[in-house]
Image (cartoon, rainbow, N blue to C red; front, top):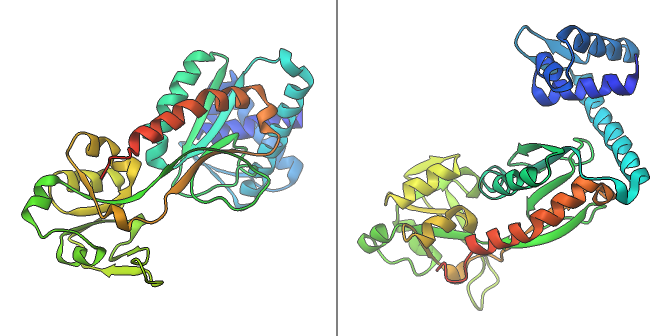
Amino acid sequence: MDRIDAMRVFVSALDTGSLAGAGRRLGRSPAAVSRAIAFLEDHVGVQLLHRTTRSIRLSEAGERYAAACRRVLTDLEEADMLAAGERAAPRGLLTLTAPLISGEDVLRPILDAFLDAYPAVSARLLLLDRPVSLIDEGIDAALRIAHLPDSTLVAVRVGEVRRVVAAAPAYLAQHPRIEQPADLARHRIVSMTHFGIDSWSFPPAPGSTSARTVQFAPRLIVNSVRAAVASAAEGHGVTRLFSYHVGEEVQAGRLKVVLTDAEPAPLPVHIITPEGRLSVPKVRAFVDFALPRLKAQFARLTPDNAA
């Protein structure tokens, strides 16, 4: 059996979550998929997958081998595309990753439109609120909201986001004014776990070098952006999130941003790709397609007059 082909079967099983799913994707019988996995396990001499009737799970050795397989398959695909040169049309599986909410609300509609425009391309979108290794995971491009460390990754800036404090206008009308961070201690706080459960920090006041940290006892703690937005928009307290999380609610008048003068510096938003991946037609086509749309979306969801 061809080892590269078996690697493709192995990775397809991981991507679809089952041997049957890999069979459907590749047009092969479950028995053929099982044989390919068994061939790889015999070749490397260790068990790669723990199998049940309904699911598969990587072994510790399987996790390391899967990362290596993705790198090998990505390099082979890149070599094919480079050899084909400009004659190659965008095709194949495009793998992307993004944070959960920006991936769902901003990137996913753009990806859907891209797939409509390029029928020979399919996509896998991993929504994760943690950074992943693009090379080890075989990812073609990622949406990142953070200051980027120096690396070999290629980064193209598409916008910026602010860390904002917001509440419903009705709530603000019925509670003490919020003119400086310390005022938050007198308010009902809806905490989102990523942004500080019982304290929020702000840049130093003018003339000071000490950051301002506000301690509070939150009335509600959630680990969901949507829950925090909904609770605040319904008048149940003050929350802190990224500007694009609340952009629609601010524009609709359901939330108002406060403490704009005390906001930390904005965080940049980039599309990043491993070095060399932009030479692959499907990746270049997606980046060219997505860049202007991402810039427009982040500009719309972080309006200058949000305050």
